[in-house]
Length: 112
Length: 113
Image (cartoon, rainbow over all chains, first blue to last red; front, side, top):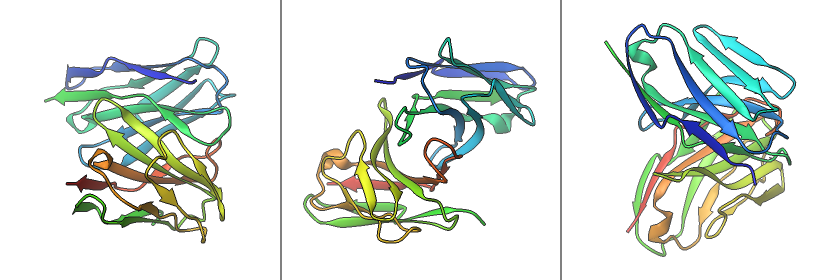
């Protein structure tokens, strides 16, 4: 059964720092991997979607990489800002293509 | 504007009183799904639908029902709610679970007393 783990569970950084969030999954047979952002009391917003055939995706200050063989993905946030404070969730599409399996998230706090 | 709309956003009810949480999407997506989010357990899938009249169980379907009579709507039904169904519920949709970006509703916070 696919399991998704995110480390660290929480992270606090000063404004301006570059940072990396980690995601690992146990079964490399995935269709895709998505990174989401969740603000307190809000729904999830998709940040980046990486298909299984891709190695990375970029959007603005965000860059996500995927290494299927090692079961890992990283989300790189450049020049962090207080507005980046949120919980970031990683999810992989299961083998049957019927669900996303979510990690429990990394809660990021960026101080000004 | 592309969106997934859930109602109600907040609900307090009592054990055994049937309730329905509605979900509607305006993106003509085939795939829709319900998740619940609990502290320490993360997001877990309740039910999903690959298309109209096609639904199936996720990881935690006990105590829930769904229907998909129209492409845009995917209601979640709690026939006899119990306190262990107190949770934050999310509806989501995409072109396909394995291919497309997943769009989430704002969530419905349910408390069962």
